[in-house]
Image 1: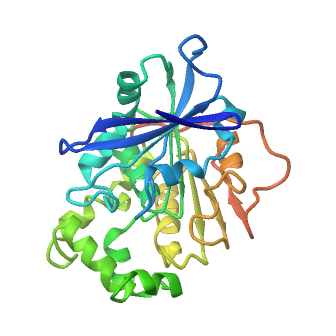
Image 2 (image 1 turned 30 degrees about the vertical axis):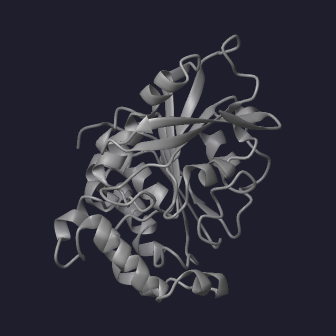
Image 3 (image 1 turned 90 degrees about the horizontal axis):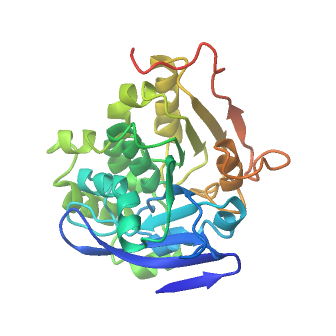
Length: 309
C-alpha cells in the first residue's frame, strides 16, 4: 500500500526486526518511480527521534526526494524492549544496516545505488545514525545528524530538565523527566550507575576514534539553545571537537546555532543544505534557513583522511 503527495509517494513495507517482531518502514520515492521506470537511486536511511514513528519522520522530508531523485527509508524500528524508544540498541542499529536489503525484498522493482547510501537522523535518530556509522563504517557514503544524543548517561541525568507544556502535562500523569527515566531503565536495563556499560555501548562518544578514522563524510548540526537534549555543547559539540582532535583530517563538518530541538532537520530548514553537501540536491542560495547558524567547515581534502591512526 502507498500514500502519495505531489511529486513523492510513500510506500509502506513490513520487515522483521532483530527480535522477530513485524515492523513497518515508510519508503519515500519520487512518484514516477515504478516497475517500468526504475533508474538506480541513492538511498537515505533515516531513523526517527524518541517517541516518533517512522511515518512521522517521513513527513520531515517533504518533496525533497522528488527534487533530488533519491529514496528515503524511515523504519519504525524496535529497541531491546520498547518500540519507539530504542535509544541506540545494537539490534536496532543492525536493522538500520539491513534497510537496503529490506527494500530489495519488499519493493523488488526499486533499484538502489549501493555506492550512494547515506544516513540522516535527528535527536535519538541522530544517535542511531552515529552508531550506524561506528558499527558499519564501510556501509555509508555520508551521514548527517541533528541535535543528536552522543552521551546517553548524561542525557539520562538531565532528563528532569526537559520542559513539559500544557499538552505534555495532560498526556503524562508524572513529571516528564521521571517518565523518561523510567522508560530508559526499562529499555536499557537500569540506570547508569547500575549498568554503566549498557549506556556506554549506546553512546556514540564511546566510538569517537572509530568514527574519526572511518573517513566517512559527516555533518553534525547542534543547537546551543536545545531544551530537549540539553547541554548540546557537551553532547554533539563535544563529539565534534573530539573527532577533530583525534583525526584533524576527518571529513567532519559542523553547524551550530540557536534553533528549537530538531528544527534544523526539516525540508524547509537545514535538510536541503545538508543534502546538497552530499550532492543529493543542488546547492541552495544563501546560508541554511536556521537561526544563528555558524559553520565549522570540514578540513581541506589535501592531504586527506586516512583510515588508520
